[in-house]
Amino acid sequence: MEVLQEYKCPCCGGAIEFNSGIQKMKCPYCETEFDVDTLRKYDEELKSDTGDRMEWDTPAGGEWQEGESDGLRHYICNSCGGEIICDATTAATSCPYCSNPVVMKEQLAGELRPDCIIPFKLDKNAAKEGLRKHLKGKRLLPKIFKDENHIDEVKGIYVPFWLFGADADADIRYRATRVRSWSDSNYDYTETSFYSVHRSGKISFERVPVDGSSKMPDDLMESLEPYDFSDAVDFATAYLAGYFADKYDVDSEKSIPRANERIKRSTEDAFADTVKGYTTVTPETSNIRLSGGSTKYALYPVWLLNTSWNGRKYTFAMNGQTGKFVGDLPVDKKAAFCWGAGMTAVFSAAVYGVVWLLRLFGVI
Image 1 (cartoon, one colour):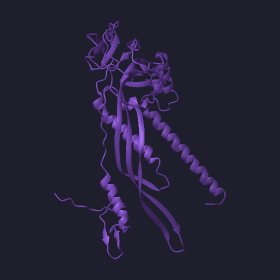
Image 2 (cartoon, helix red, strand yellow):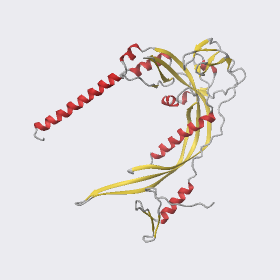
Image 3 (cartoon, helix red, strand yellow):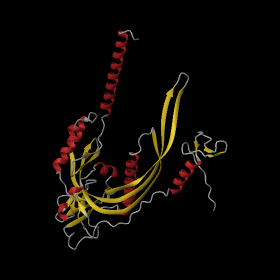
Image 4 (cartoon, one colour):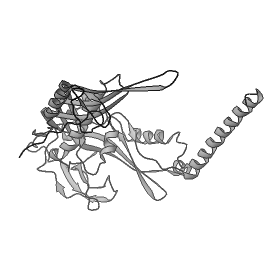
């Protein structure tokens, strides 16, 4: 099959052709002119665009050693399907996701053993104090929520994460402009210059975390970052004593798209920071290729807190290592209305004061 070659204007995207009168390529839409050599180089860059190649083929986690998982029990919540790991001495508990009781039935077996774990540094009291600080100073928070709020449950959970590492080779091209304006006695002028800006290089990533539990919202878990990996230690079941540990239900292969998304976004942001001195910069093409990929299976500490108000449950999370606290709060609609009305009144009074001063000095 024959392939048609169509040249597009880098400025407006319109089809361009060779103008014999000026011996240049000219766009009939924006009237931008191009040297043939410039278009030839641009065409070579277009042909070299190969698209993203972001593939992984690396094992993560290790096999459980004989006898190592004997002291653990694996429980399934019949209500929400949440998966929980507790030590062998636990007889009954409640699901950290839906609060329903779970029955201890199955012994943990046949799953990948984590490579590493970041132990909890902060205790339950620190999590409760984190919630109190989170509520403090929130003007639009319902007063009754603060006064009658009680913590229904506080759970320390080791959340499974896949940690991805790779080298990213990237070629990214941008469409940029510089705008210059000036005036004379007759006219105002604006000159817009168009540029094709190319960036190429390599950036390395280590331990890009991807939540391995479908019950944990990705945005909530990513809001708790960063973790200090210098505190990570080789996994040992002793670290799980007194805490819950959620077994992954999203394996490393299914987590690759999320890892690729984070790596791609971070690479593009890093490269975009190097394109300076232009009025506008618009990404045009992005080709990212990964190499040297590695994956580790880790457990990260998270405190989950559930509170109730007005018949609704609110879930908050705290980084069990750093104390970073996140969670959505309700808004008192009446307080929000009064606050908005107050701001409007203040603004109106300020405007009235300015007008009065202008009249006083005879300006208006």
